[in-house]
Image (cartoon, rainbow, N blue to C red):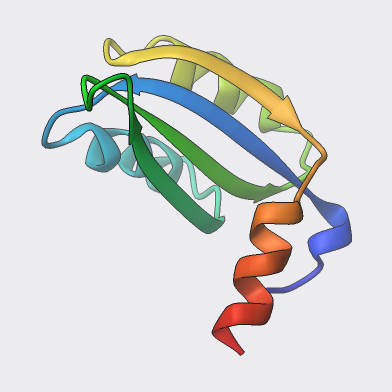
Length: 94
């Protein structure tokens, strides 16, 4: 994982159904914004999912978040500088 110290995690709460991840990742791809890590787990009896996206701090980030918030299936978006989950996964994957 490159430059994790320059990264931030976006935590999304979304409706859990097929295609949600595709819509979110497609939005980032269309704007040439790299997602360096993804973790997704179902919550609330699997009716919702929590998605963590590891992205680089970038001047375009607030615009990206604004666009993500407009997606129909996205219920909440939060920023987090706590990257522990990605750091642990990175150690596990090595």
